[in-house]
Length: 188
Image 1 (tube, rainbow, N blue to C red):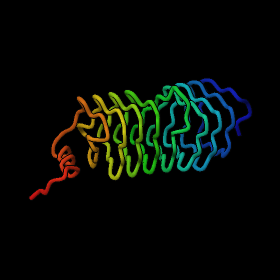
Image 2: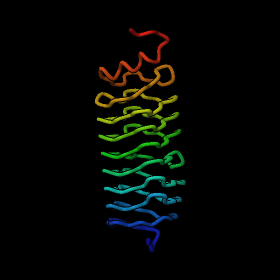
Image 3: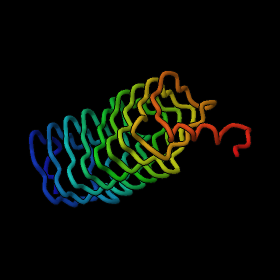
């Protein structure tokens, strides 16, 4: 479907390509595109927006996402770990279930009104990251920098303070009581 390797300020509606190799997208908008099970290899997305798209089970190999927004997208079963720097993404009203974020710099990213179920954040820099009104059920946080991260309006998180740096992170009650379940104590 994509005929060149460079697109600028274009809109793609209901595309369904399954192999994208070395394509650069700058200030492009993708609407209702089906990229589920698509292999993205060395693609660069700069200042792009994905709206109502499905990227479930997509394979991202050496891709760059710089100033990219996903809105109302289905992003199930994606490993973002092989993406290149810079990695700057905002997720709004998305399903990010069963995703993997490993060794990524996610500072100041925004996860808004999203389902982030059974996802793994491992050895990431999540300093000042916003988790606004997100459901983090079964999501694991292992050896992350969560300094000044904001979980104030999110729920179902279970973050081990012994395995993560949570200095000055924002939490709210009653969700913050989940920390007690990680202590060697008995609650009655």
